[in-house]
Amino acid sequence: MAANSDPSAKYDPPITVTTVRAQADVTEFAEGDTMDSNIWTKHLLDTYGFQLKNTWVTDSAGYKDKLNVTIASGDLPDFFKVDATQFKQLADAGSLADLTDVYNTFASDLLKGKLNEDGGNTLKAATIDGKLMALPYVTATMDGAGMVWIRKDWLDNLSLSAPKTMDDLLAISKAFKNNDPDKNGKNDTVGLGITKDIFTGYGGLNFFLNSFHSYGKMWIEDPKDKSKLVYGAVQPEAKKALSTLQEMYNAGEIDKEFSVKTSTQLTDDIVSGKVGMAFGTMANPINYFSKSVAKDPKAKWEMYQLTSVDDQPVKAQISSGIGTFWVASKKSKYPDALVKTMDAFVQKLFSDKAEFKFMYDGPNLKYHTFKYMDVQAWGARKNLDAYLAVNAALKSNEESKLNPEQKGYYDQVKAYQGGDAAQWGTYKVFGPEGSLGLLENIVKDNLMYPDQYFSIPTDTMVQRQSTLSDLLDETYMGIILGDSVDTFDGMVTKWNQLGGEEMTKQVNEWKSAQQ
Image (tube, rainbow, N blue to C red; front, side, top):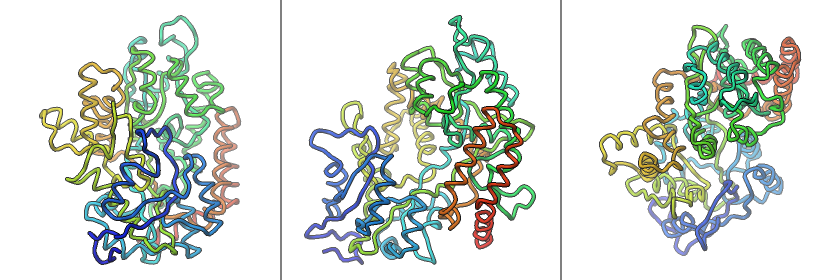
């Protein structure tokens, strides 16, 4: 059996390590492969001497509830993924293994670097009383910075220019509703596409709010006292944004049925040519707009920076990145297996031993093999770094320095440039005209506003956050649909009474402790 003091040691004979997981939506396997037996599980067995066994597998939507049942039973697997609330509950119950020593022993410099790319904030959130109680999911939160996507062919049809101000954007919305932008002779288009999930990126209104210097469900610096934090969604700046949205809704510039529509239904409307503008992020061409372009090759989606309601620049809100952790059961004999699993992920994707087949494999890269591995660490700059590397390789025609993921994007961009229209989505993100180019400017100009609270939930958040969130959803939606904007003020009072005031107190106690 492997000695804990030797990072290179392999369990011999092999051991079995248990976990549970959600299977990523639309996961395809090569013949003979399954979630229990695939390129990653075989690599872990061959390299570290442990067989990873899924006690159960469910879809993404059902994972949290099924895990809660498992937690309640007390029969925990060796390691597993949790959200911030579950992490706090398990830590408070004394159910988790202290990972400090196994992390220091088995985490490579590469993994430690990835987990510190955000300044170490997520590692701090995973540390309780000086002990590392989880491995955090560190991903590129900057990728969530907002931009507005507009049908450039509709702008051209109406002789409209790119928006520079919020007034420009509102004028475009009005023109897309009233002036037949698709030139089909019918009044069948709307200006702005949104969904029932108001506080989201794609199809949500977070970035619309940001244009009014208002922020959704996140903590921001108190404008009156920078040493304190306040909750963005209950600040008065939201009222002007909501009033504007109500006017747009009444004018028919927003779909009358948006309050019951999902992101999938919004995408259907976009694909059918009914919507000319939506707020979102750099990834939207791959996830959504590629379907529009595939159906209508004339559709030209272009991304633009968020526009301001005044002369002050807009800062797009992004999350703190605190939300997902991997933990090991205190009863587990093999907490090192969690660290080794995450380390294996970064080694096979980002080191000089990386292999493309661990990212994508099969004909036309149909097998997204990275999804087979649940324990992941991408780092805070992964996609922006990929964009810069791909475009440097395109200019120099030298691809040898690309890692496997970057090489995949490079090949798809080259394929699009060679006439493969099916690669438009990747081209529009990673290519020379890609959305990550706009993100690069947003980063350079410091036009992002991260959530200022980066820790696990406070006690009041655990108890009251769901109720307070529902109150915000109902009030914002009601105002857009026609309620008086002044109902916002009553909501703020109620929000404070139902736990918001106590939550704000706890958040500021945390902030004081950081200083």
